[in-house]
Image (cartoon, rainbow, N blue to C red; front, side, top):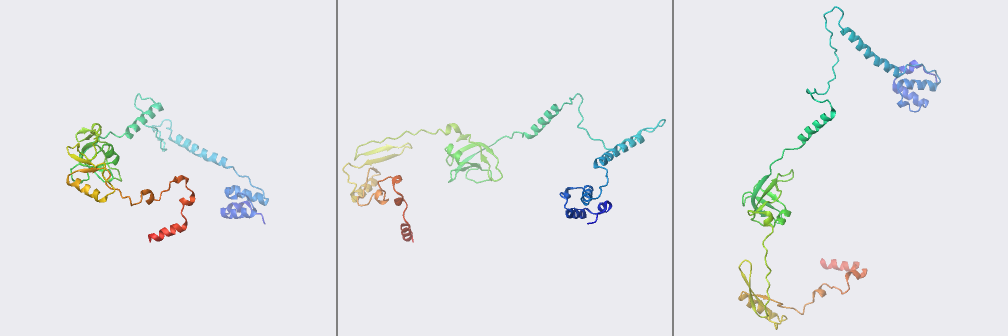
Length: 315
């Protein structure tokens, strides 16, 4: 291959130099600058590499050029001796400093940073918003939650949602009149929600939740007698205990005893009827005497034939 002169290499485009360097087997030629690539090609061809000025020197001269221009501009701007002309201002834009300090203000950075933190804190802390208090009638839903109806027996957008936990904790029932603070509805919600319940039917929630203690009613009377029990709401129940010689296996007598008690506004207590001809629950469910945890796998896992027979019966 003939040696290409340095002038021809410098005049060639970078793509041709890359192709030539690849043909000469120069490693990493794509990372080299054009001048360094020309030197590498000349060195691989065995030609002498011409001396060039290093980039640092060029950068030094380039950096010195603005300084010389600036000095020349200052000399031109300086007033000549015996002249009334004022020096012209430099056309360079001045770099803006920080904000002007007030008289007597300390120039220390900590004070500025503390002042900035106080300003940011005052912007971040929102002003307290007064809680809106709602009052209305409770309407419970099937799932346990409910709504505070602002207008009784009317559904409106101003109704407030009551969670099931709040209704359960305060033992609310439909028709209770409650009040409490409300938060605004979120993006995915339609109604505002009740934050807490303050009053229930005009009484503080803490006192109303305690509830009324109901004493247990104990009933003990002899067989065959009728005992009248007074309930908490003022009503009464007439209880009649079956005789000891009552035969619960006689179906006809059992039906007759129930009809007589119903005609006399009495409630029979005891065992009315037992059908001794029917199998017991143990026999109906085919329960074995051995505990389930001790049964072998052959009994707990039915074979495929048993499952096929079960499916055939269901068709």
